[in-house]
Image (cartoon, rainbow, N blue to C red):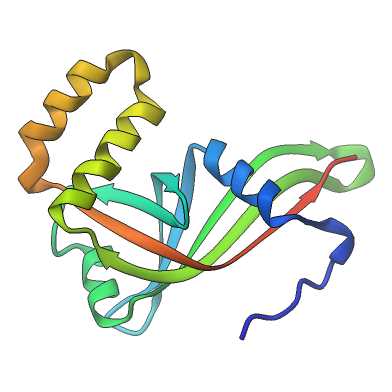
Length: 156
């Protein structure tokens, strides 16, 4: 179903891919819009087991509309990049995920939002939990269930 990586010498293990993804700050979700065009949206996220959670405030926006018409998505993270000018290359690490997306129910939404507070604002947990409650009904959380994950790195 998924093509094998062409540059096997750059391939990293699934465990290392997950660890890179777990520690990343921002990723890009790729969807197919209702107009048939691809749409890539950068956002923060959290990895929890075999799921990636993303959130946004506007229900009915591009991501929401896209996954209700086609729930297949891609999620990409690129990190630790260093351009080596004299070698005409870049050191990097990247992870690509393919999966299916769905809108999280309220219980899973709350769980994901707490995980995001823990990841992005651990010193402000109390305020983060209050913020979750204040904006809970305005927030949409998408769960991406990982079907395929692959990672690649050049570290020279």
